[in-house]
Amino acid sequence: MEKKQAAFVGTWYPGTAQECETSIQKYVKEGQGRIDGEFYGGIVPHAGWFYSGSIACRVIASLQPRGEEKDFIDTIFLFGAHMHRQSEPFIMTRGVIETPFGDLEVDGELVEKITSSLSIRKLSPLQFPDENTFELQYPFVKYFFPKSKVVVCGVAPSSFASMIGAIAVEEAKTLGRQVRVIGSTDMTHYGPDFGYTPAGVGEKAVEWVTKENDRNAVKAMTEMDEQEIIAQGLDHKNMCCAGAAAATVAACKKMGAVKAITLDYATSFEKSRSDSFVGYAGLVYGRF
Image (tube, rainbow, N blue to C red):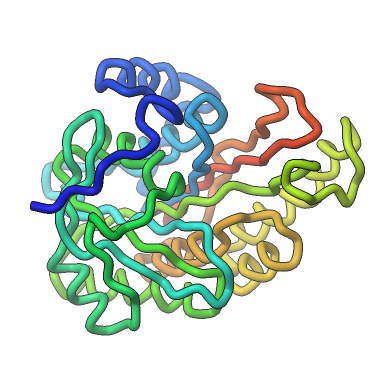
C-alpha cells in the first residue's frame, strides 16, 4: 500500500509517539481546554506545534463525540493547502499517511464518490505535496480518532470551495459515514519577512493585526459566511487558506451546524517577539 511519508516530523512537531503524547496532554489542559458539546467541525492553525499546536490540538480534541459507540466517527475530512484563486483543487486518492502514532488510512471509497461528482485533481500518496497545512494535523487526528479514516483535500480560495465542502458531506451521507471536518488556515502573515506591513512595525502593528485584520477574518468564520471568508482572505491577506475555511463552513452547515465558538486566538509574537509574525485562530462549529 502506498504511503505518504512525513516531511516535517522531528522539526515542526515531535518525532516520536511518546513526545507527541506528552505535548498533547499538556495542550489539552491549556486555555479553555477542549470544549464540551457536539461539534461537527473546526478551524485549526498549522504553524509548528511550538507556536500553534495547542490551539489546533484543543479544536480537534473538541470534535470527539460525547455519545455511545454508535457515535463512532468513520472519516475525518481535512481541508487545507496554500493555493491561489485559480489553483486546481486536489485530493489524496488512496493509501496511508505516516504519523508518529501509526498510519492514517485514506477513505478511498469516499474519495471515489467525491471525485465522481466534482472535478478535483486526483493524487496518489507519492504524488501528494508536502503541506504543513495537512501534516501538522495528522498526529492529532490519529491520536483523538485512532480508528478513523481520512479524506485530505486542497481547496482554492474560490466559489468552488463551498461546493467541495457541501458535496463531500453529501457523498459521505450516501455511504452512511459519520464524519468530522477540519479546515487548516493561519491568519495574517505580517511583517518584512512576508512583504506585508500596512501598519508599520512594532506594537502598533500587532494591535492592528489582532484587533482589526484578524478580527475581521474571525468574524467572517464565526458568522459562517463562506463568501466573506474568501473575500477577507483575498482582499486583506488575513487567511492563508481561505478556501479551506470556506469549505469547512459549508460542510458543517450541510451537517446541521448553526453556530460557531472561537476557542482561542494567539500570534507567534507572543512566543517570539519579532517584526514578522503570524496570527492563529481556533473555532468549532455545531448546533449548540
